[in-house]
Image (cartoon, rainbow, N blue to C red; front, side):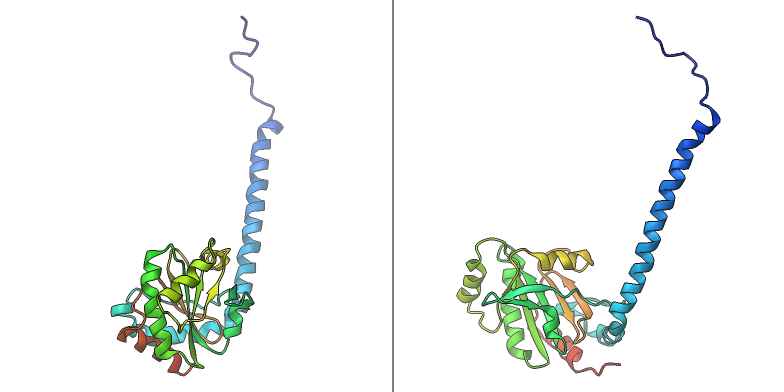
Length: 227
């Protein structure tokens, strides 16, 4: 069989040799263009959306010394961040939004019955609501079970956890939305949120929310004047 391909192919004409470089330059330019649009657009959106969150960072700095002991794993906010307006359902199936709690400090918690640490943490959250629940503070615990909708209700009933209002999202979109901004890496996840909907601090994993350390920190968060 003969090989029709030349053993030493002649170099491609200069214009053809330049084509890969031209294409590469165009691709890089497009990528930089998208990056610039995303970067600058993101800065503008962040500045606009988070301008009211500077006070949450200031508050976070003030109460950081209290993030020890039972709440030592709480990561305090160092940059202004307003949470997405999460959508979920209440016990009657009515759609609710996180923005409904504007004007209140809340501890936003995501939990599921298949999450063992979540189940262990729920009684502490129930007791925290009993201790500090008021017009100024509420625990908003959102269940993200995607199957057997009655299972989380039965869990709360069987465990006699009656102080927590029941909220759920059977599509787990609240988790995905928080994950997209780096605030939900596992279960359970809890975010302390100020009255403007801004992050004060976030914790990945369970905590003794009804313990002295947690109660002191949350009390300080709800009583410290905003700067």
